Length: 284
Image 1 (cartoon, rainbow, N blue to C red):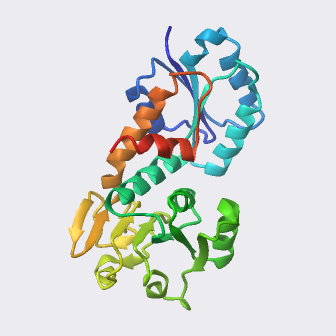
Image 2: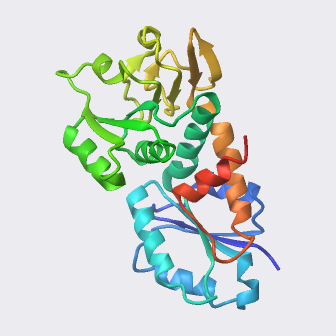
Image 3: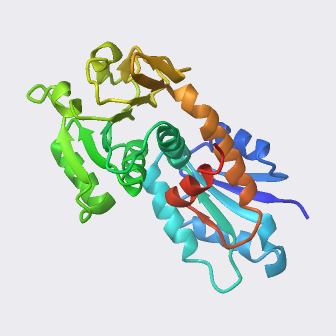
């Protein structure tokens, strides 16, 4: 029986990146759908659920993509509402590559330093990837400073992720608060801002002796941290270990391929941020 993957995308055109990755992950038949909403997703999911017997449903799965991560999260919830008893299929949510990218960044960080009680700074921490990096770092026991241009946005994200542990600190980067004040005590910095936003220079970071790992997840020039190269993969600059987007991307792609394959192991799996991260830990 063929392994069928429904690629559900909130954008008009389903992502070619996600389609190629799905095929490379071992999918026999890819069914891509664009403009998927909370309304029309119901019939798509029911079509996947009711066309095969329960014992064969592990051969059908759903991948949620698209550039709008909030839409992806809403669709994830709506899809799960359709399941009952053994009538269900496995689902992976990775809109805008948010979960696989964040997981790869934190896994690489953990390979170089102990994250428990470490001071982390996530620049651009209110974006889809940044907030997942922040959450995963906190789950490893790091204290996480979530940095945004607007303090209100940083505060909102910290409350949304977890307002009770005390591991999250919102902060604003603006003309009144220089970057040095926000990173002086950092042991790890992850830049996850929008394309074209430069936060700081690698040359300046070399003076911070507590800093160990620097990761820039922006692949589009100008990068978030000037002096980082996209291809950097554990490049040493004095005492700093540096990663660029392409350097992180190798693990991200391996993880993406593996999760697509794992979707077909059973029909009851939900691959969200935490599940994808846990799977990625086994790849290094």
